[in-house]
Image (cartoon, rainbow, N blue to C red; front, side, top):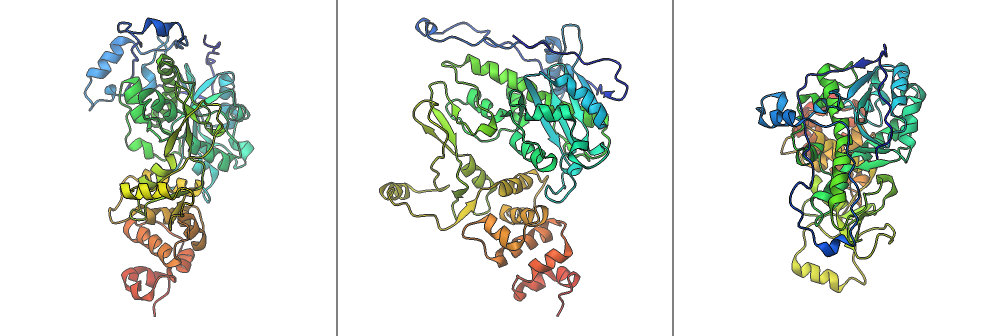
Length: 479
């Protein structure tokens, strides 16, 4: 049974109800319409959980029109605007440009058990140096009948209490309210760093998506929002240049539509995926909140535990691979037994190993030898890797290791020694770190602080200075 939902108040003068063009869409057909081929004996032990049926749905004609529309048209894409209540209303979007307005609207979301959640920020902002308004520019929350766009970047003042509405802070800290999104733990990290709030109720949709879509291949790897929407809500999610907009400035209708759609997708995916989970036999429990670090439990009670160790072996032959690092971070193993077995760590192996190597490892399992080179998995390196993957394009000559080192040095403001240790154990040579940084600057035209670059540049052998003639002159290092 759905909780009583408060309707959005009419006549709120200092907030804007955004009605972007009805461009994107999604009707979700009902589940289990086919013949019942279940085993009668199984029915005596399996008790299905009731589905949650939401009031707002996409009319069948609207869905049909979207499916048959040209992909050159916005009408072919998923959007919150195509969901209608029984009286034909779409979810209302509140665009809040002041703290006072945001507080008034956020109060309407108090008591909602599930919210779609998302953030937007300036793409070139530095989480450790840029103002909070650049790093958390827009906060989006969505319930079934309403969406709130909280434009923190436009609020007056710079203190946490001037940027975060009290009711929103209450919602973010409430473990009884699921904040559903994709890679939402990264959003929580930004909220913590920039606004000083420890989010609870962090629900990673990727975990439930993998649980219901590929139950025999469940892992902790992220699945992007577009893929989840396409395969679950059955229409494509439009992702274009709006994604890298200037989020610290007043938003256009198109930007509001994009921001509202992302948050609403989180809300709809939560309930649709949860209904699909309830159809699984045996039915697995819903994945736990991210901050609890609990395993994902399959229907048979098998628990999948995420790696908790901070250092992970990476094949030395492929030191630049971001995907290799991510795969090792997200690697899981099936742990026999019921979920009551507490959370823990999993054993990881090299990214590539021959059969003979595996046999040798098994033979020496009582006294394993450490890998000579270990990449360090930490919040800092994960943040750097996410930045690398967010780049719209990349020179193929620039490896991920160079960009990772550059991000740690420039965007996170670590010195060379710290970068060397964050990138690998034992630490990289300072010459290597400097070379990585210069490669990123030279080949990708990355910005830099002249004084800090001079400190890094002098670690390069003078025999290669001629390659960077422009910077030798700019930094005043000419002989």
